[in-house]
Length: 344
Length: 64
Image 1 (tube, rainbow over the protein chains, first blue to last red):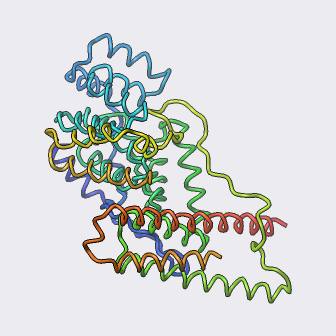
Image 2: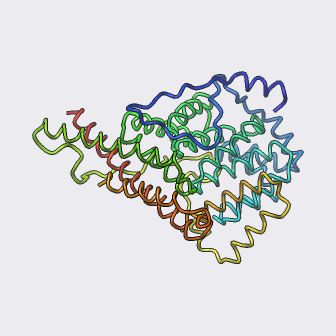
Image 3: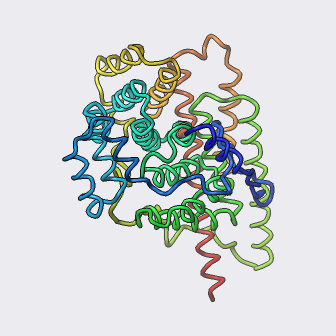
């Protein structure tokens, strides 16, 4: 992004006033910075001529670019663009294949490609895949951090922008930070009317879920507990975590009291205290086309990490110290540390 | 039951927080943290299920 555009982008940002949740239950706050939602759309329409020129600079042949043009209708613009970059940059293709195979070494391989390039288009695609990998590994905060870099440094270079915006909102929802996720899902729908129907349907579904959950104190409690669970995994046992846990007990006491009052008033058992006759289903993403990667859950990377031999794990960890810039080393150390804990 | 389970998680959190610094770098400590996080996750799952069940029941009653 050039200087003028960066200023325009920054000046278009307004703080989104997060609606206070009912009954004093606060939405969990992500540990990574989350810039405010832009009121003005920072995304520009896709510039195909510019994209193809940038791909050519990365090594794409005229034949590969022609194939890209032919495949847009078949697989969607984002997928066709990603395939073109993969064809043009073999190291990127190899790293994505490692990710697709579910190999825990994928984070290192993708980061190597990222560290080796200054090209904003290639950076955009690598960061997108890294963010998806972190999200698949139940690390939404690292996904947000990676997408923050995407939005700051790689915006408006690739047709992956729409999916990056979707996964930003999705990462926030996974934290869960519903107050932050909701306006971003809405912004995604507003700014990307041409995005894959699969992503648009999923965004509508998530908005509905979050709105329903926002109306419920119990969902607010569950959201807080999810954040606390992640804090405990990171060995955050100190006062802020204990205060959150104390609030859950107070809130549960208040809810129990309410149910007892209801029971007394109705002269019978309060609703919801018996076994479920209709247990809740996991929300499912609709089938569809035109997206990079797979929206469904893959076999857990943590499980794959746990199944590896010690020597294989040590080999991946040794790779972290070979020529990667310190900021990427730190990111990967954090990622593999959490992956190791998740499979215990 | 949820209250009881959350109380147990809170108690273990305090116990782990009180452990001396030299213990905190050990493998056991990491394993205990992971176990505790899993337990907190279970309480969260139960809370979510209860919320969804009550939400459905309220919808049904509201539609009558």
